[in-house]
Image 1 (cartoon, rainbow, N blue to C red):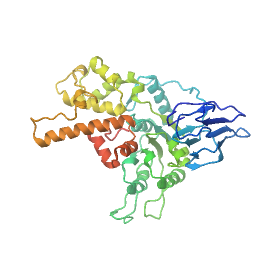
Image 2 (image 1 turned 30 degrees about the vertical axis):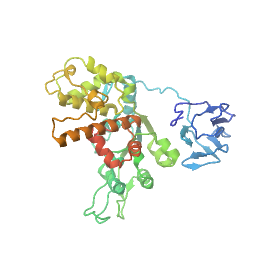
Image 3 (image 1 turned 180 degrees about the vertical axis):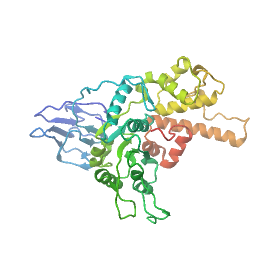
Image 4 (image 1 turned 90 degrees about the horizontal axis):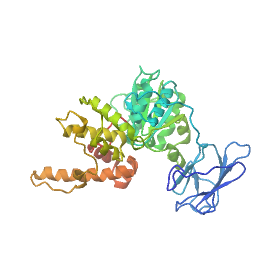
Length: 425
């Protein structure tokens, strides 16, 4: 189970025997999802051993594959299915990857001494040596753009351009033009021709961030550009040849979007030749000290002694829903609040949940009305958005739905309070 109430639960599929999934305790794989029927579906190895036969067992809410309800269908390994609110994937049993951890403690601007990060460095090093498409997945702030830049800077295309496009921040009407360019007069306001990201990145790397936000109707155009290595500007007649390596990134598991019909399976498989999941900071807290030292050095802070003491203990106890991006903002805020500090132990660390963060309605009558009012508003926004950010693990779409806010306005608020400053994925 890769998403839903029973995420992480699994069952082994034996050859020659159907595995039944449902809420009935007698099923082989028992789920607690209330929208799953008692005997919902079955899975078994197809005749000949190639693929798997999935059959709906008359469930109330159906079994979906690529967004469509099925009665019985043969699917390949790696297929993702949806039943109720649950997504499940048919995949080989986990086995160790015979790839020794890297000896590096830093790759580009990525820093880490943990085993998880050194294993990530080893994968990124191999990716840099090849030209395959890479799909980076992970929570917001885990360093997806930094990983893409590291692949670019250590690969054969390092002398070419690195062009990053954040699909989720572009208005839907402009994404096509941003990717493929446009000719003069192609639409209202197109006063001059403009090269798209594919052309600008030719000879180098194109990084497509938040790919899960790409509208469904544009996905065939992107797939065709990847397959043909040609693009046609909006409003144009001539195709332009491009030579780019594409690295894509998404906050959520794209296979679940494929299962729900929100993402094309052919585009997913074209981009996920090498799929890399970045570890969240809370799973590698031993990397806090070296990452803090790196951030302080970038800001010219004269830190000579160890990164230790009560400040580090407080940071280690924090949950880090915003990952390294949030840590960077905490360090920047501490430096701003501690102008005379010469050592990490002297920094004034402020975290969500601190007294000043927990008391959003404290009124300062010693301030002008407008300033006092703005402080209360800022405290409310910071606390409200911080809770949603943690609950939805930084998923902008989910936060926007929960808050009933426009995505563009939400992004502005999140940037205002330091949760998603642009630039480092």
